[in-house]
Length: 322
Image (cartoon, rainbow, N blue to C red; front, side, top):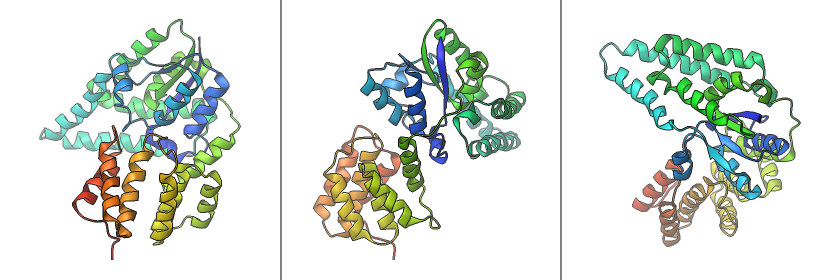
């Protein structure tokens, strides 16, 4: 019997202090599953790392499960059909009469984004109020465009997942709209009230620093990041110093990060090396900067933003805008 069903919000976890990546891990800790099932990914995607751009939650979930010896099993045997949704949009864009349909699709996208930007907690996500609003948005889309290529055959794929889950025990993590389908079949496994942990509070602060804005309390953020003291926290502190024009302080921090083990989360090495290269360029240490940029490109995977920074840095030394 599936004891817990949790939605993955993809890149939107960063917006939710009460439902961030650490919250998902805390909920899984409480559930103590023997297996974690991924409803929205295939084994090919999981083994090949094809999830990295669309589901950053797994940067946290996979190491957590490995550390505890918990198997992670991908259940979507037709995940390749997800690409049909993008192909459908591209076909509409090429059709002379496709523009109004695309605009209508974007309208549904905006409705979903508005729902995702509301403050969310585990109990919110498991509530009938939230699920009914999600059902309304998705239902409108299906009514307009059909259940099939336009949705990446979501209903068909999730029916396959439900069959695969029959008789199994564990926890299930699903992309938000897949979670909507599964919630109707696994109503007793929906998330409930949860008391935040210290790890969640730290993750919320890190997430806030990734979204640094001019009006933020930069001093307060720095204090919190230094208290955490992890490689990711110090990298983000260096980002704040650089944003304030204090690049020497940023470089000193990055030198410290570089002496630490900054392999986790998996997106961090690329960002660290790319920014380190830029700061070394500002310090006039071109040879070290080039080694850092090449380090980004030598990684088995790095975020596209980090690769772009590295490629630009190899062409010419980084300089601050005048």
